[in-house]
Amino acid sequence: MNKPIKAVVIPAPGEALELQEFQLPELEDGGVLLKLFYADVCGTDVHLRYGKLAGVPYPLIPGHIAVGQIEKIHGTVKDVNRKPFREGDMVTFLDVHGTCQECWYCTVAKATTRCPDRKVYGITYGVKDGLCGGWAEKMVLKPGTRLVRLPQNVSPLQFATCGCGLPTAFHAVELAQIRLTDTVLIQGCGPVGLMATALAKLSGAGLVINTGAPELRLHAAQKMGAGVTIDITTINESQRQSKILELTGGRGVDIAIECTGNPKAVTEGMNLIRDNGRYVIVGQYTDHGEVEINPHLQINKKHLEIRGCWGIDFSHFYRAVKTLELFNETFSLDKMSPQIYSLADASCALDDIEQLKVIKAVLKIN
Ligand SMILES: [Zn+2]
Ligand SMILES: [Zn+2]
Image 1 (tube, rainbow, N blue to C red):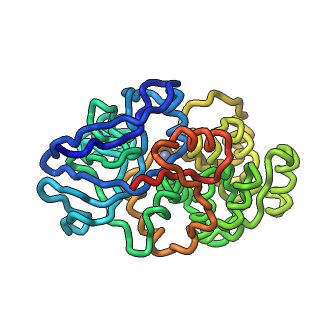
Image 2: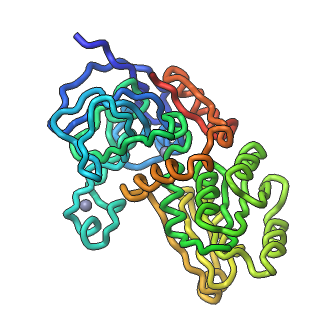
Image 3: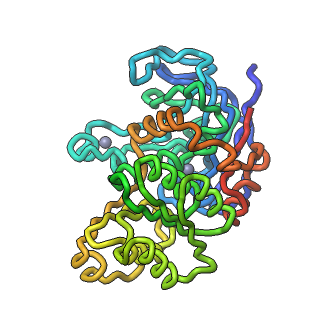
């Protein structure tokens, strides 16, 4: 008999995390068994703990971004270049699975993030679906999961540290269509904001301004490429506006990307962008309520272009891994200083993220 597999389980919203043991299941044809090394811990996991996401089948094993070695493949599974994966390959995978490629959203709108069949490892798969979360010693990937080999120069720890923030920010920065020399405001300096800062700079922004808190994370934003950082706990909204107008010839920034999760940041962002500028909103992943806007002043008259950004597809994930390979130094570990926890300490990792004690938390598994 196989050794039982340890995995972290959230039994129900608000309940304490448990370390449970599971038996190794049979693989389906096209299924892959991964021995995991590192998993990402992110704000989504904090939301999951409190039941803030809709359609989550508790109990579940969290962890939607993880990296590990292929231990077993049933049948043939190929990469995008049609090269088969082998046992022993170090890989990661797109957490989104099961988009149908048949519905109106998949085929006509080409917006797979809105596909009704969309499933996400560690979020919409429960324990009843098997070992479908990354906070476990091993994980079973279902047929049709898109895998990517980890590039030689990217360590599993570096990949997990960039975590879901990197592909999420990649999608947002792609939508932002930054031009060379643009002044870009990144609101928020959590993992998505930090990754967006680095990607904005790589995309040719002349100046990246980052607003957020605490100091620890603003310092990381500077390392990721922010030319100016503004601490929102010591500089109030009108002072922030004056400062940004002063930096932009009185016009406001060309582009802003909201990565805060606070609805109030959205109205503020609208006021900090120049006329005919662009706003990408990626931080409002869960519903934190409503805010008032003045559509005439904040959108219509100023020709503001607003783009919403929720979730990622394979192109964002693939290109994010490629970005890590090609611009590896930009994402070096010393800039992000990840805090490393064991599976048994997962709840401590969630506490530390919630209290903004760390820049980034990852689980070291094997
Ligand atoms: Zn679909
Ligand atoms: Zn995440």
